Amino acid sequence: MKLTMTNGQLARLVIRIGLGINMLMHGLVRIPKLNAFVAKTEAGFASTLLPPILTKAFLYTLPFVELTVGVLILLGGQFSRWGYFLGGLTIGALLFGTTLKEDWTGAGNQLIYVIAFYLALRGLDESARRR
Image (cartoon, rainbow, N blue to C red; front, side):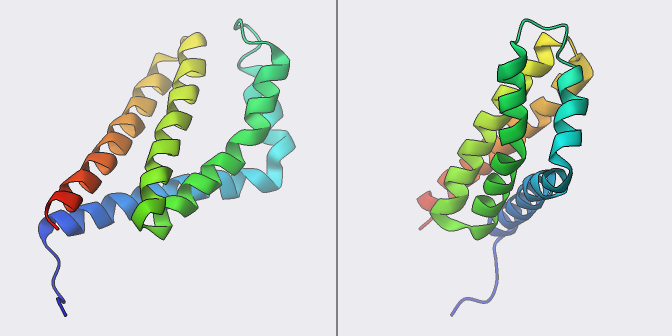
């Protein structure tokens, strides 16, 4: 039984724990105050071309998606693969809305998540090649 981890294995664990906790907690802290989260966030989209009903539906769904992404990532294995993918799609949707609002600082922050999900998925490829 191998008790040591390579640097690559440690790196994959660090990004998995970091992204998993981040996404999990995004969902967990928003769910108890869901109506307030939706009302506050929805107001920022009033001047965009997004229909309010679509914005509201997305915002009511978002915390549950974030929680699911976090759980999938933290479970590991094939679950993390789908968690990283779903997380990347979620950030893509968020990035669309953020750029509609012309919130370029927020968009820049979301691009960091895009890169993190990309690297996490690529890390899974590296792991599979070494087996």
